[in-house]
Every structure is written in structure tokens, then in C-alpha cells.
Length: 289
Image (cartoon, rainbow, N blue to C red; front, side, top):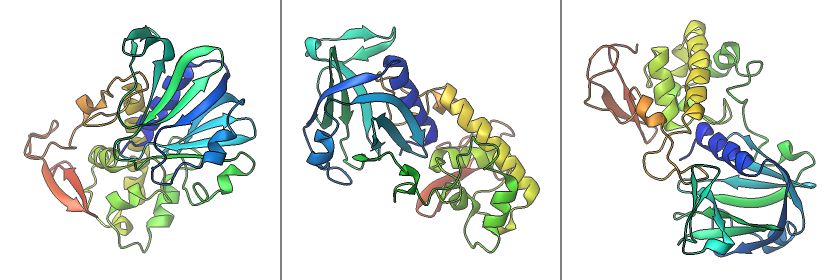
């Protein structure tokens, strides 16, 4: 499932492709079945409005459209790309590197722009994504957002003291604790494994047994890992694609994730794998305590 760096990459990609406000001419729904069905009345309300910015909260991508927000979640296999209505069946260069592709199977939503041949397309083979429209006023109190924890890149809100307080009395592995979106948002299975390796903490340690100094390292490495992943365009193993169709290249920097049985890049000890909370977890028995 795309995590914070992947969603941030998509937001930045759309902002680069559409640096000024864009006017929505029409929204076509090819397949309404997603995690929550697409609501026709919500889609119709977007027509004739302007998208003034793309931004992110947790793993949600948000479009500011007048007094409304489009809420998009990529689920497990969702992606946004740009095609050109005058080039169906062909291809052309976009923004120097991206490729404009023809329409594909599993395209759910097509957003047509006024005075612009480009079309924003949401594709999602497994249909775990989301495309909803909510009021912009008090949007952070909406059920999608009201239980979310702080952003890990916000220094004032994501701190070792915060983690220490929330972890006391918790009988949960520190990896699952770090992936709890009520504790901190945007960190999933891949980045939790990488952050804990760089912090020297084993993923199956109970959160309540992690010290403040160790949480300080976790906070520091969370920022380092996530920023580095954003710079590399996220991580692609199977499904994630950037807006232009390119892959995320942070997988080249992974220290432990999906490296079971391979030597640790730091100490040469073989990386181990176990299952924590139903998810595969990776760690080095020498570098992590």
C-alpha cells in the first residue's frame, strides 16, 4: 500500500504538471465501485469548478476545489496519471520525462479540463482506493481525518515525548505502534522496517519497553527515511507509479525490507524475517536490539 512518500510524490507530480489553477469541465465515472462507491451527486458538483491546489494529509491526497475537497486514497493499487484526449492510442512527452498513455482497463475516474486536452485519470485494479468529495469547512473534523495523529515531518508535533507517553502501557510491538495512524500518520510496513533498522530497535520489541532515547532515534530516522524516499519518488515493488507512470527508486536504498536471508549492508549478518500483526517484518539481529 502506498505510504506517505508515495502519496507526497503523486501530489508533487500533479502540482508540477498543473502549476496554476485548473478548471474542471467534466468528470466521467467509468466504474463506481471502490472502497466506498463513488457518489454521482458529489462528482457532478465538481463540474465547472477550479482545482487551486493539491496537498496531502496522512495517506490521503486532497484537491482544493472551491468550497469542497476531493479526497483521494490510492488503496493498494491506485494511481493517478495524465492522458491526452487528442492522442488516444498514441504517446507523447509530458514535462520532459513523463509519458502520456492511452486509456487502460480499470480506469475508474476521468477528469476532463476546460481548455486543456489533458485528462486526469484514476486507475485502480483492486478497487481499494477512494474518490469522495467533502465540504472544505472544518475538513479535519471529518471522520476520515479526526482520529489521525501528527505528520512525521512536523517537528513540533511528532516528538520522542509524544511517542513515550502514548507507548506506556501498550502491549503492542513497536513496529505496529509506529504504523498506528492515531500515533503518527503515513508510516506503513516498508518504512517502519527501515526506520527501526536505522534506529537500532527490533520490530517485535514491545512499545512500552522502548526508551526515550530510542524514541528520539526513531523520530530522527523517521524524518530522514521519509525525506530520502520522497527525493527518490517513493518505493515501487509491484503497483505504485508516479503521476507520469515512472517507478519510485527508494527500493535501491532499502536496508532490510524484503532482504531476508541476505547479508546486512552494515554488519553482514543475515537479515531475518518474521510476521508481526499479519505483516512481514525484517530486521538485523546484530544491528537491532
